Length: 213
Image (tube, rainbow, N blue to C red; front, side):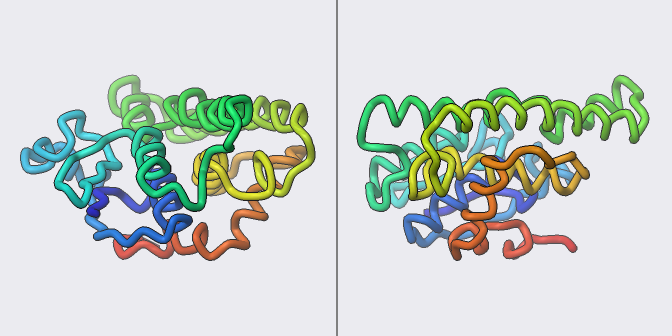
């Protein structure tokens, strides 16, 4: 498999985690978003939307969107599973994952932040305030959802799931922008449990070949 991704992309980070958890080898192909490599003509053949990550399967098929890619990996490489065996559990894990991927992340995507600065002329500190506000608000909602569930090591149960694949990159980005992460006991406990696992550490930005200190 080949993964087109960017080391700081949280969506790419999610897929890297899933690949590592499942022990799937892949070729790492960097696409530098800040330098605009995702807008170049040759990448359009891989991802018409110009987004990362994009996964090329062993059969040469191309897939986009991190959530779809992870579910594809879970269906084609079932062990270890990233979704619970029961329908209710799967719905709960998907809801947690989507709370991050669909509610928090889109408001703080690189292209959104660039638009705020370049087109709307928002000052740097105002942009960062925007970022911190939406991440904090979203994580507070995430914490409330976790509080409704039985106690667990990870977001849902005692093994990592799709929800953890989404949570960890979001916390990394929150830390990078100095988001207040206090008062989120279940959220941060799940994050810390994940970071004890080699798969999450190997997938983190600092372990990527295109990492920039």
